[in-house]
Length: 406
Image 1 (cartoon, rainbow, N blue to C red):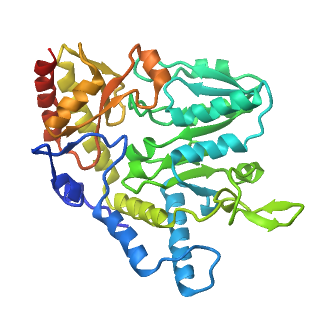
Image 2 (tube, one colour; image 1 turned 60 degrees about the horizontal axis):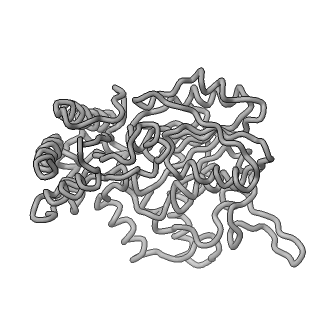
Image 3 (cartoon, helix red, strand yellow; image 1 turned 45 degrees about the vertical axis):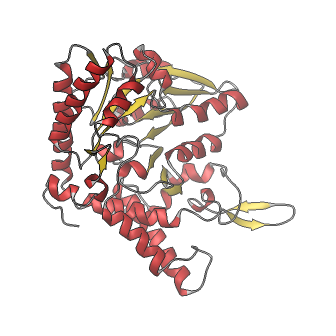
């Protein structure tokens, strides 16, 4: 696939929603870390599949079933290439990144006293499933601290891993601080201690290129809707032998081999973890999103997002009534901040009246909020379709919010 030069106007033209107004103002959408907007290529691919060749997959013998199965499995192949998985058979389609993590947590053999290492900046999706194992199987959760910018002390990680450590689950990029973690080094330390490792890649896959073989991830999870694809679709990558050892997460059709009155045997991965009718149209949409993203010059796109991040960070540093959270030089295009004397929810509502959409709250990262000493933050997150001028619109809106709240 040929990469096009990155031209912001050409990119924006593919997102019809960006032409609308909100509260009588041009929309400035700065909430892509929660969910990204969708290019026309994704919308059209999903509609075309429903219009022209839809049926259920794998079990049919007629033409429409075969065509739909081919489209669904082509999506699996595209995802495998996107993260450099060794084969499509190591790709499990899920309903989202959350379910992908839950599949792993539910499929592990955990005994009382087995330890699971997490960082304090994890999304709740990479915390709560491990709490289930603490509550239900007697697992012990061990917490890795971070510095103020989201940096991880690898020596501290190594010290946390002991003979009972079973698993290490770490974000590849924080959804609040934008901090990127040294995945390959984390995996190396985990493996040296006899533990398996999984990365939450829901943000990392959007803002950089991921190679699951290079980082030696045992498992890797991400979602479609942050990657310019639809909701209702996620991905679990797992090393083939590890997937084969895991018990299924759900029971039903497709995930079985033989079902009898007295016994059941299970299908091989990845189908073992895809019970029932899978997200067929959503998989087609995810393929279209990855195909579309792959036409862009990713290096130029990363530079564009870095320019958005830097412009926002520099502008907000100039405001002595704004506190920035997380200032790593190589962070992704996510900027979390607090406004002196104002609750983030109030800030977000006032900005919305000016057409600027940001996120406010704990961002499903309450342990991180505790680490930062706040209950919530405001968060502006940038994507391929944002202009530098939209950073200026954010700052202007914040000045107006400050006047109203003071």
